[in-house]
Length: 125
Image (cartoon, rainbow, N blue to C red; front, side, top):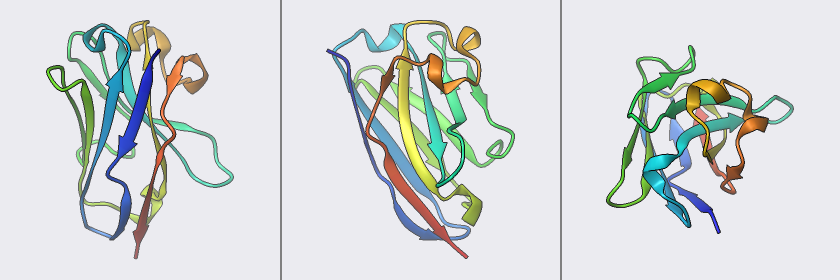
């Protein structure tokens, strides 16, 4: 049974940093596309960043240069390092995983099979 558990969210001021973690279990971690999505109230769930089985990464335009996605296969953990946070980064952040390649899944969050419960990130101005 696949389980994804996020942690690391919180409240910070604009310009601050946070690191999110996603502890994964129940599947071969290195064989899945994994990613971070976020959803603000009243808005669609957007792809933030993904990392594929070969380690290649893709970022949303709004976070390029500020966020970094990485994974530690030995710990079965996915990370999202977030720097220079802005109020518009405020959202609930979700960890996602899927057997398919990230390139195939694209930006459509509905294609991902496995999700965590999310962790809230709030950035104040």
